[in-house]
Amino acid sequence: MDETKAPGAAVTMVKGDYFFLRRWLDYYGAQFGRENLFVLSHGNDPETRRIAEGANVIHVPYDESRTKVEMRRWAIQSAFTSGLLRYYNWVICGDVDEVVLVDPEVAPDLLTYVTSFKPRRTPLVFCPLGIEIIHNPAIEPDPVTEDAPILSRRRLFRLNANYSKPCLTRSPIQFSPGGHSCNIDKRTVDPNLYLVHLRFFDHHTTMARLESRRQMKVLEAATIGGDKPRRSTWEKDGETYERLSKLEPVAETVDFAAFRKRMVEEKREVTPGGHWFFGGGRSKELYRLPERFTGLV
Image (tube, rainbow, N blue to C red; front, top):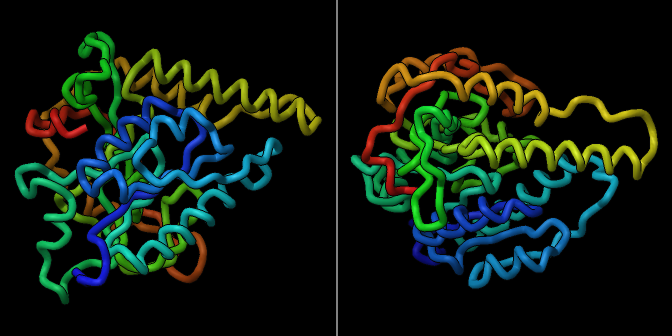
């Protein structure tokens, strides 16, 4: 740890998604302190400012045409993350429906864990194992309420190598759109870190969010003209979720050494200069998180 810098910070960019923003702020506020959280408010939403009181909210103008929206979004998050590393030892950057956990059997919090490495062995970039929470209403019927951790009600998940993002860094970085890759070739797939993707955590919320994205596509097509919009990724993901939401878990575990190994062995370069994606794909089965994770998010 560089004693001239603060220990850690977290960055996200958001438009709406108030439920996830509250959970993101609560979780990373406990990890780093709310004053070390940075929310790029896409469109300068007053409700975002209200929810994120005590954190740092930065206004980013919203382009109704959404021209190159993902390229722009990840370019500014790359630059912002890299700039913060002038003042912080570690920065996490990710979407508002993602959080990075350390196995509570190993360390009580992220900063304790990342500072436990010997200086010469400390990774430049951590890639947590990507897991997607999947709500099966038949197995987990209880609703997620404001006063309950999500993982106390939702413990089923599938593995997804696409979400093993290079999101926790101590080195200036340039993310690919979506944050799935970066320009740093040497990354560490850590055995004790997990990126928990929450987009499928609740059947009703998932379907409502999907419909909101579909309506946004319709409005965009009406604004810029042209043909009926093509099926969005979110529409396809909705179909995927409906299928997954009927599966039962095959084991209660977070021991996936073989999957991590396959991710690295099957990685593929997408552009020269360090940008590659993990292999391994997604698990066909669901698993259940052990009970020790239930109070974290």
